[in-house]
Length: 155
Image (cartoon, rainbow, N blue to C red):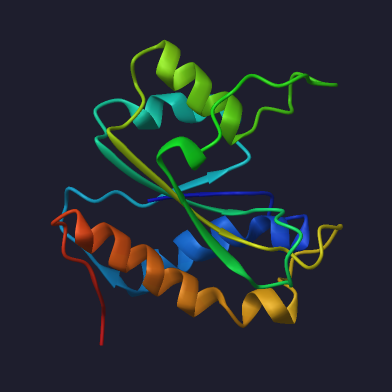
């Protein structure tokens, strides 16, 4: 499980908030790693070595109501190199493209995305996104459990 985003940009940090909640609540086998990827970008490539199944949690702009969720798999997962204004603008599509080029792309990749409401300087999630955080966490746990890695929420 990999959560990405910028905690200093309100809802953009939802992926990090989600994996932090997973670290608090989830009981998973040792084979399941929970990674706070923050804004590491291409540095996350090392986290893909030896990984066959990957669930990513991130804010995804879908033009839908704030808090809406989407599940992306297979060809829906973006993997391309994009034009940058700065070398610090490395996103998931770039990471996945390089992973494919280096033969590090996992067998199964699922992105659980949530439509942000606010992407501006701030450390708190908007009410619409915060209200969906537990649902998002449970969807991620269900996803991992489908791969015969049974995870559950601690009592």
